[in-house]
Amino acid sequence: MNHSALTPVFAGLRWSLHLLLIGLLVLVMVRVTLADAPNVAAVHGASVVMLAVYLGGAWLAHRRQRFVSAAWAGRLWVLALSINWLVLVLLAQDAAFVVFPLFFLYLQLLPTRIAVAAVLASTAVTITAVGMHAEFSIGGVLGPMIGAGVAVAIGLGYRALYREAEERQSLIAELVETRDELALAERAAGVLAERERLAREIHDTVAQGLSSIQLLLHAAERLDNERPGIDQLRLARETAADSLVDTRRIIAELTPPALDDRTLPGALRRLAAATEHTLRAAGASTSVHFQLVGDVVPLPMSVDATLLRIAQGAIANVVRHANARRVELTLTYQPDSVTLDVVDDGTGFDPDATAGTLRNTSFGLTAIRQRLSALGGTLSVESAPGEGAALAATIPITDAAATARPLTAADV
Image (cartoon, rainbow, N blue to C red; front, side):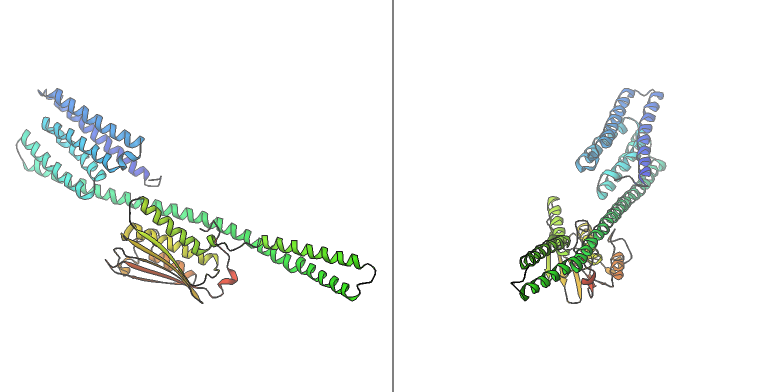
């Protein structure tokens, strides 16, 4: 996870876990030495081995961020520590306390159900080991059970806090990226608007003037083909005609063409292809298709950008939450509106129950409605648990062509 306001908190928790385990192992060695136990050498050896395994895994996790993130590596590390602890707790009663930091490792590195099962199993081993070294007592039973319960509560809370921090960091990164894209889009829009203004000015002044000069000279030629200076008139007319051709070429170069790959359909088509490629690379079988209905109408940049952002957010939510096998993107141009439909065959949800929550993480239904409302648009959502979901965003396009321009690379 990138640096955020909670990064020092997580770092402090990790260091606390390191110090707790190291301190407990040192305590076990000191206690067994003071007690002059006959197996002091074995206890020291097992403690040193466990300490080396723990510090080695922690060092690898710090130096190579992917070590613990890989499921097999984290589980192998936890298994080695558990075996070391099991040997140690059979040798020394005080080693039972070392199980407490192990609880947090189980809850951090193992899936939730397996982690809870590992905590319960290690708690049972601890109670049994304490009973073997001494007599069974209420404290010897309740102590490990209470410790396990506290560890599970803290561990699950840590997981939820970490997950929320990651989602918040992702949202911040998305907002920063969107802000930069909007700045580039506004800059590009200013450049295009200035080029279009220059093209109109040249067309309305220079081009029209050259066209008028050409017509007047041609009319003068036709009045009297034998008059003196007729060759100079013809040369002047031809020069004006050539200059008019060059002027029209400059106007054409200044006017930005509406390229197919810079339109909203082109951006949505690339979004669908890129999403499907990413999912296939990750091993998922989800297919994402795009369909265009109707004739493409030039829309204002705000409309194109809003529909593109809605499509990106909707697809991201489907990938994260819906477990869908098929996603359909449909862009429909109608005489007075444009509609974006996003349909999936995933797990579905209850729109009323999630309207005010973060089910859609960084792009909730409320945020979509707010974006559409700013443009006079509407949102329709149809879904039910287990029946997939259908989202339809509609924006009126009356008078849209008056302020329209094509999407630029900064927009998409």
